[in-house]
Amino acid sequence: MEKLRAVEALLREAAETRAPAVLASSLGVEDMLLLDVIDAARLDIGVFTLDTGRLHQETYDLLQAIRRRYRTPVAVYTPDAADLEPYIAAHGPNAFYDSLQLRVECCRLRKKRPLERALAGRGAWITGQRRDQAVTRAALSLREWDAENGLYKYNPLADWSEAEVWAYIRAHDVPHNTLHTRGYRSIGCAPCTRAVLPGEDGRAGRWWWENPETKECGLHPRQQQHG
Image (cartoon, rainbow, N blue to C red; front, top):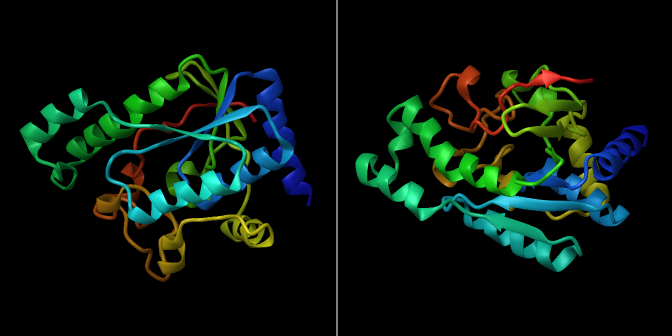
C-alpha cells in the first residue's frame, strides 16, 4: 500500500534526521497504527502516553495489552499533584464543565505540562492527527515546526481517512480501545468524552458542550506549515 510506505518513510525520516524522535500516543486507533509500524520496523522512535488521572478503565486495559503485544515500551507521564491540588481546591474536580477557561486550564495541567516533560530533549515528535478529524485540523501538514515546544512535529496520517486507519487495524489485528466498538470514535478523559451520534464528525464526542472551533486541548495549536 503506497500510503503505508509513505508513513514508514516519514517515520524513518523523523528517526534518522530529527533524533531523538518520539511518538506522542493518545492510545487511539491512529496512534496504535503508528505504534504497530514502529514496532514492526524496529524504528528508533520512543513512545509515550499521558495519563491524566481521568482516563477510562478501557484505556488502562489497552495499556496492559500493549505491554503484552509489543517490544516497544510505552512511557507514561502523569500530572504533578502540586499543579492539580490548587486547581481542584479552588474550582472542584469537574470545573471543566463550568467554562472554557477552566476546561483549558485543566487540560494544561493534566496534559500540556506533562507533555513538556515528555518532549524535553527531543528532536521531533510524532502524532496520529488526521485532517478529516475536525475543523481545527483541516489544514494539517505532514511536517510542521512546533514553535511552542521548539522542535519538529510529524503527522504521518494527515491524509488518511478513518476507514483506511480501521482497515489497517483489522488487517494487522492491532489491539485497540474497546470503547471504539461502542461509538467512541475519539477517546480522551472519561468525563470529557462520549459516544458519537450518527452524522456527527469523529471528534464530536470530545468536549461536546463546546463549539467545534474550541475543541482542542492545547497540545496541537496550529503551527507554521512545512508540507
